[in-house]
Image (cartoon, rainbow, N blue to C red):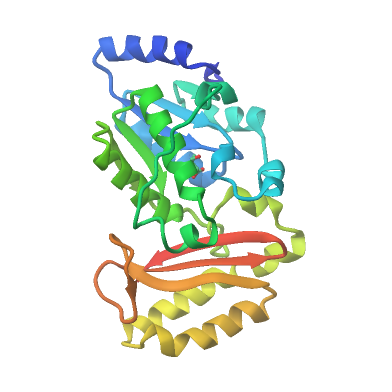
Length: 280
Ligand code: PAF
């Protein structure tokens, strides 16, 4: 059965109040829709851990830097609801825009430090938009657990920091990146790739895997970067926003591998920005 879809916070609160009264735990999976296996794995993790599961779908204008990107973002609500059917989520929350940003809305949640690098550098303001909408979704759903993919690893760390700093009583759970058979990390943006670009997209993950091997063998990032950059560009990518090794917790830049190190990449292929990260 397709889960009920609610579009305003009063209806949502009425439902969660009933669950709370019955002492049931609530898990939330925040998404912007265009659901793929990555999202479904988050919903499954929530289903396993929580008594009640809410999937939210909201294409959040505040986190887009480019109006064309916002306009072109895939919107597939009916298909999304059908995909969630087999997992048995309890409720899909698709808030109308004014339920998140009512007239006169004037508050921004901004996490400093962790947002200055990687995607934060290439997309100024993006993470303020993410932190603001996620804090609203946490408070509107009053969830006990929230499930985020490691695919957006920087986002996961920022959301953890934000929940901790604002004393939001929620546990943020990171779930592994789900990949296509050829290694491409699943992303709603993959739908925007042309057939030709899709063929070359996995090169980003391939290059990261071979970087990892060299780093584990003791190489320094600066020495092996040029060859990796050349491989990515030779595959038809137009621009690399970043290809860096960083600490997995504080995201500080690293040259040599150490425990908790991760590789992070963002690159443009035929007008589509792809991101990926792996543990070293
Ligand atoms: O990862 C996403 O899809 C979005 O950034 C999120 C967390 C749903 C906030 O809009």
